[in-house]
Length: 259
Image (cartoon, rainbow, N blue to C red; front, top):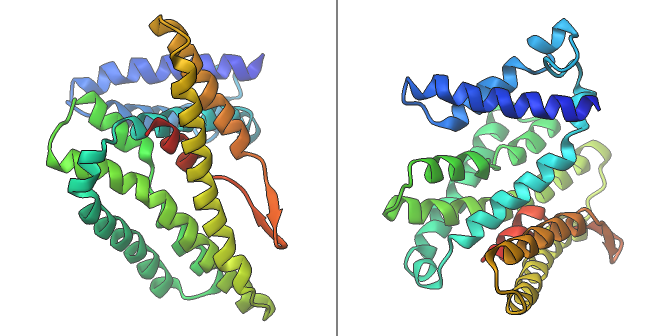
């Protein structure tokens, strides 16, 4: 009951805050971020009033499933924006920018801190949040060369982040324990990326075939929502290949599904 109440308060507070921020011509995502801070455990949550805010991180963690599904919808929306002709035009440029900006963030953090824990933090620094990018693009109905280039970069960033994290985490663990496993460093991210793309492509193929069975937009929308939930659920499944723990990336799977 508390989780549902907190979710309702978060949604209402975020929507009301956008009306305030619109007076200053700021994007809605900024209002959502500020609202999250205000109703979090360190501001209104400290008052301990039920329903007014999140009193602890456990209450925030209780909504993790909703966050995972929301990220699936965002990735699906990004994938929907991709067109083959557009990717042929901007693909090479997006690849160069996406890889360089991710690796540059990793290098700066690693050089600045230079300890095993910092190597892992450097890999985390490669990741960007696709939600904020897509929300701003959608809110202002942005169209043009920059937007066409931006969305593939956001998509590519997840794949680069997976590889960078696996390699960095393996190096950090080797520095701590003097045990180095090349298979776990290279095989795990490769299987995760390829497997995620294949799973998303297969699901997208099945979805397009099933959509022909339904005429109304409402039924097709329900079918798409069901597939997004299915992909997010399957992405939570871990498996072992050649002694290496692997899984699927919900972002890549849902993005490929939308594409």
